[in-house]
Image (cartoon, rainbow, N blue to C red):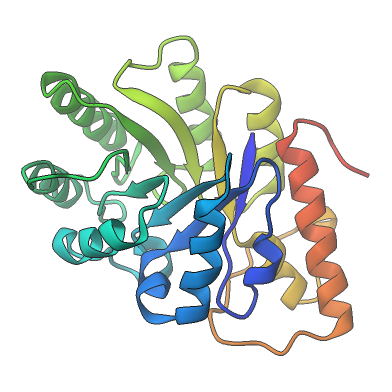
Length: 252
Protein backbone atom coordinates (compact mmCIF):
# COMPACT_ATOMS: atom_id res chain seq x y z
CA UNK A 1 0.00 0.00 0.00
CA UNK A 2 1.21 3.50 -0.78
CA UNK A 3 1.49 6.01 2.03
CA UNK A 4 0.98 9.77 1.66
CA UNK A 5 2.29 12.00 4.47
CA UNK A 6 -0.01 14.99 5.08
CA UNK A 7 2.16 18.00 5.94
CA UNK A 8 1.96 21.72 6.57
CA UNK A 9 4.14 24.24 4.69
CA UNK A 10 6.76 24.08 7.46
CA UNK A 11 6.88 20.27 7.58
CA UNK A 12 6.46 19.43 3.90
CA UNK A 13 10.05 18.18 3.67
CA UNK A 14 8.91 15.05 5.53
CA UNK A 15 6.52 14.24 2.69
CA UNK A 16 9.43 13.48 0.36
CA UNK A 17 8.88 10.70 -2.18
CA UNK A 18 8.24 7.49 -0.29
CA UNK A 19 6.55 4.24 -1.26
CA UNK A 20 6.17 5.18 -4.92
CA UNK A 21 6.07 8.95 -4.64
CA UNK A 22 2.56 9.13 -3.18
CA UNK A 23 1.40 12.52 -1.89
CA UNK A 24 -1.64 14.36 -0.60
CA UNK A 25 -1.79 18.14 -0.99
CA UNK A 26 -4.45 20.34 0.61
CA UNK A 27 -6.33 22.61 -1.79
CA UNK A 28 -6.46 25.53 0.66
CA UNK A 29 -2.67 25.51 1.02
CA UNK A 30 -2.08 25.04 -2.70
CA UNK A 31 -4.14 28.20 -3.17
CA UNK A 32 -2.61 30.25 -0.33
CA UNK A 33 1.05 29.21 0.09
CA UNK A 34 3.47 29.68 -2.81
CA UNK A 35 6.30 27.47 -1.50
CA UNK A 36 3.85 24.66 -0.65
CA UNK A 37 2.30 24.86 -4.13
CA UNK A 38 5.71 24.82 -5.83
CA UNK A 39 6.84 21.81 -3.77
CA UNK A 40 3.85 19.74 -4.84
CA UNK A 41 3.91 21.05 -8.41
CA UNK A 42 7.41 19.62 -8.69
CA UNK A 43 6.28 16.24 -7.36
CA UNK A 44 3.26 16.17 -9.65
CA UNK A 45 5.57 16.55 -12.66
CA UNK A 46 7.71 13.54 -11.75
CA UNK A 47 7.20 10.26 -13.58
CA UNK A 48 5.40 7.58 -11.52
CA UNK A 49 4.51 10.12 -8.84
CA UNK A 50 0.90 10.51 -7.70
CA UNK A 51 -0.48 13.64 -6.03
CA UNK A 52 -3.97 13.67 -4.52
CA UNK A 53 -5.55 17.10 -4.11
CA UNK A 54 -7.71 16.98 -1.00
CA UNK A 55 -10.71 19.27 -0.51
CA UNK A 56 -9.69 20.25 3.05
CA UNK A 57 -12.86 19.03 4.81
CA UNK A 58 -10.92 17.10 7.45
CA UNK A 59 -8.36 19.80 8.20
CA UNK A 60 -10.56 22.89 7.97
CA UNK A 61 -14.01 21.57 8.89
CA UNK A 62 -15.65 22.19 5.54
CA UNK A 63 -14.72 21.46 1.94
CA UNK A 64 -14.42 24.17 -0.67
CA UNK A 65 -17.39 24.82 -2.90
CA UNK A 66 -17.04 22.93 -6.19
CA UNK A 67 -16.45 26.01 -8.35
CA UNK A 68 -13.57 27.26 -6.21
CA UNK A 69 -12.06 23.79 -5.81
CA UNK A 70 -12.19 23.18 -9.56
CA UNK A 71 -10.35 26.42 -10.29
CA UNK A 72 -7.47 25.08 -8.21
CA UNK A 73 -7.73 21.61 -9.78
CA UNK A 74 -7.51 23.00 -13.31
CA UNK A 75 -4.51 25.13 -12.44
CA UNK A 76 -2.66 22.57 -10.32
CA UNK A 77 -3.46 19.42 -12.38
CA UNK A 78 -3.16 16.74 -9.67
CA UNK A 79 -3.26 13.01 -10.36
CA UNK A 80 -6.70 12.89 -8.71
CA UNK A 81 -8.80 15.38 -6.73
CA UNK A 82 -11.25 14.78 -3.90
CA UNK A 83 -14.83 15.84 -4.58
CA UNK A 84 -16.42 18.03 -1.85
CA UNK A 85 -18.00 16.09 1.00
CA UNK A 86 -19.52 16.95 4.39
CA UNK A 87 -18.26 14.94 7.34
CA UNK A 88 -20.84 12.41 8.59
CA UNK A 89 -23.63 14.01 6.50
CA UNK A 90 -25.04 11.77 3.76
CA UNK A 91 -27.61 14.20 2.32
CA UNK A 92 -25.21 17.16 2.11
CA UNK A 93 -22.46 14.98 0.61
CA UNK A 94 -24.82 13.62 -2.02
CA UNK A 95 -25.96 17.18 -2.85
CA UNK A 96 -22.35 18.19 -3.53
CA UNK A 97 -21.79 14.96 -5.47
CA UNK A 98 -24.73 15.43 -7.83
CA UNK A 99 -24.12 19.15 -8.25
CA UNK A 100 -20.45 18.60 -9.12
CA UNK A 101 -21.32 15.91 -11.66
CA UNK A 102 -23.45 18.44 -13.56
CA UNK A 103 -20.56 20.86 -14.09
CA UNK A 104 -19.11 21.11 -17.58
CA UNK A 105 -15.63 19.84 -18.45
CA UNK A 106 -15.23 18.06 -15.12
CA UNK A 107 -11.53 17.20 -14.62
CA UNK A 108 -10.82 13.49 -14.40
CA UNK A 109 -10.14 11.47 -12.38
CA UNK A 110 -11.76 12.44 -9.09
CA UNK A 111 -12.27 10.71 -5.74
CA UNK A 112 -15.69 10.38 -4.12
CA UNK A 113 -16.07 10.06 -0.34
CA UNK A 114 -19.29 8.46 0.97
CA UNK A 115 -20.38 9.88 4.33
CA UNK A 116 -22.82 8.97 7.08
CA UNK A 117 -23.29 8.88 10.83
CA UNK A 118 -23.07 5.07 10.91
CA UNK A 119 -22.36 2.11 8.68
CA UNK A 120 -25.92 1.93 7.34
CA UNK A 121 -25.91 5.58 6.23
CA UNK A 122 -22.42 5.17 4.77
CA UNK A 123 -23.58 2.17 2.75
CA UNK A 124 -26.61 4.05 1.42
CA UNK A 125 -24.33 6.89 0.32
CA UNK A 126 -21.86 4.45 -1.26
CA UNK A 127 -24.61 2.65 -3.17
CA UNK A 128 -26.10 5.92 -4.43
CA UNK A 129 -22.71 7.11 -5.68
CA UNK A 130 -22.05 3.75 -7.33
CA UNK A 131 -25.40 3.82 -9.12
CA UNK A 132 -24.97 7.41 -10.31
CA UNK A 133 -21.46 6.77 -11.65
CA UNK A 134 -22.54 3.54 -13.35
CA UNK A 135 -25.54 5.24 -14.98
CA UNK A 136 -23.25 7.96 -16.38
CA UNK A 137 -20.60 5.43 -17.44
CA UNK A 138 -18.06 7.26 -15.25
CA UNK A 139 -15.27 6.00 -13.00
CA UNK A 140 -13.81 7.42 -9.80
CA UNK A 141 -11.47 6.67 -6.94
CA UNK A 142 -13.21 5.61 -3.72
CA UNK A 143 -12.08 7.39 -0.54
CA UNK A 144 -13.07 5.79 2.76
CA UNK A 145 -13.30 8.44 5.48
CA UNK A 146 -11.99 8.01 9.02
CA UNK A 147 -14.73 10.11 10.60
CA UNK A 148 -17.96 8.16 10.30
CA UNK A 149 -16.41 4.72 10.65
CA UNK A 150 -14.45 3.10 13.44
CA UNK A 151 -11.25 1.19 12.71
CA UNK A 152 -13.10 -2.15 12.70
CA UNK A 153 -15.82 -0.84 10.41
CA UNK A 154 -13.32 0.35 7.81
CA UNK A 155 -11.81 -3.12 7.77
CA UNK A 156 -15.33 -4.56 7.45
CA UNK A 157 -15.92 -2.36 4.41
CA UNK A 158 -12.68 -3.58 2.85
CA UNK A 159 -13.80 -7.17 3.48
CA UNK A 160 -17.12 -6.36 1.78
CA UNK A 161 -15.29 -4.89 -1.23
CA UNK A 162 -12.68 -7.66 -1.50
CA UNK A 163 -13.22 -9.38 -4.83
CA UNK A 164 -16.43 -7.40 -5.29
CA UNK A 165 -15.34 -3.83 -5.95
CA UNK A 166 -17.81 -2.19 -8.39
CA UNK A 167 -16.17 -1.50 -11.74
CA UNK A 168 -16.90 2.23 -11.47
CA UNK A 169 -14.26 2.45 -8.71
CA UNK A 170 -10.72 2.21 -10.04
CA UNK A 171 -8.76 2.77 -6.80
CA UNK A 172 -9.47 2.60 -3.06
CA UNK A 173 -7.83 5.08 -0.70
CA UNK A 174 -8.14 5.24 3.11
CA UNK A 175 -8.56 8.88 4.09
CA UNK A 176 -6.83 9.72 7.34
CA UNK A 177 -4.91 7.14 9.33
CA UNK A 178 -4.68 7.50 13.11
CA UNK A 179 -4.04 3.93 14.30
CA UNK A 180 -0.86 2.32 12.92
CA UNK A 181 -2.35 -1.12 13.54
CA UNK A 182 -5.20 -0.32 11.15
CA UNK A 183 -2.58 0.45 8.51
CA UNK A 184 -0.75 -2.82 9.14
CA UNK A 185 -3.92 -4.94 9.07
CA UNK A 186 -5.21 -3.27 5.91
CA UNK A 187 -1.86 -3.71 4.16
CA UNK A 188 -1.63 -7.36 5.14
CA UNK A 189 -5.25 -8.38 4.56
CA UNK A 190 -6.19 -6.14 1.60
CA UNK A 191 -3.08 -5.49 -0.50
CA UNK A 192 -5.27 -4.27 -3.38
CA UNK A 193 -5.99 -1.05 -1.45
CA UNK A 194 -4.08 1.58 -3.39
CA UNK A 195 -3.05 3.90 -0.58
CA UNK A 196 -3.77 5.90 2.54
CA UNK A 197 -2.77 9.25 4.01
CA UNK A 198 -1.74 10.37 7.49
CA UNK A 199 -0.42 13.32 9.47
CA UNK A 200 0.27 11.06 12.47
CA UNK A 201 4.09 10.70 12.12
CA UNK A 202 4.59 14.46 12.04
CA UNK A 203 1.99 15.23 14.70
CA UNK A 204 3.45 12.65 17.08
CA UNK A 205 7.04 13.71 16.42
CA UNK A 206 6.16 17.31 17.30
CA UNK A 207 4.73 16.01 20.58
CA UNK A 208 7.92 14.04 21.30
CA UNK A 209 6.27 10.65 20.68
CA UNK A 210 7.19 7.60 18.60
CA UNK A 211 4.56 5.82 16.51
CA UNK A 212 5.88 2.53 17.91
CA UNK A 213 4.66 3.67 21.32
CA UNK A 214 1.30 4.87 19.99
CA UNK A 215 -1.38 5.17 22.66
CA UNK A 216 -3.73 7.98 21.67
CA UNK A 217 -4.87 10.27 18.86
CA UNK A 218 -2.66 13.32 18.28
CA UNK A 219 -4.15 16.28 16.44
CA UNK A 220 -1.99 17.93 13.79
CA UNK A 221 -1.15 21.58 14.47
CA UNK A 222 -1.10 23.47 11.17
CA UNK A 223 0.85 26.47 12.47
CA UNK A 224 4.44 27.01 11.44
CA UNK A 225 7.06 25.27 13.55
CA UNK A 226 10.74 25.58 14.28
CA UNK A 227 11.72 21.93 14.47
CA UNK A 228 14.68 21.06 16.67
CA UNK A 229 17.05 18.13 16.15
CA UNK A 230 15.18 15.83 18.52
CA UNK A 231 11.83 16.43 16.85
CA UNK A 232 13.40 16.00 13.41
CA UNK A 233 14.77 12.58 14.35
CA UNK A 234 11.44 11.48 15.82
CA UNK A 235 9.48 12.59 12.76
CA UNK A 236 11.82 10.75 10.41
CA UNK A 237 11.63 7.64 12.61
CA UNK A 238 7.83 7.83 12.60
CA UNK A 239 7.60 8.27 8.84
CA UNK A 240 9.91 5.34 8.19
CA UNK A 241 8.01 3.17 10.68
CA UNK A 242 4.65 3.80 8.97
CA UNK A 243 6.14 3.27 5.52
CA UNK A 244 7.21 -0.20 6.65
CA UNK A 245 3.73 -0.93 8.01
CA UNK A 246 2.22 0.14 4.68
CA UNK A 247 4.43 -2.43 2.99
CA UNK A 248 2.68 -5.07 5.06
CA UNK A 249 5.03 -6.06 7.83
CA UNK A 250 5.70 -4.96 11.37
CA UNK A 251 8.82 -2.84 11.64
CA UNK A 252 11.08 -3.09 14.66
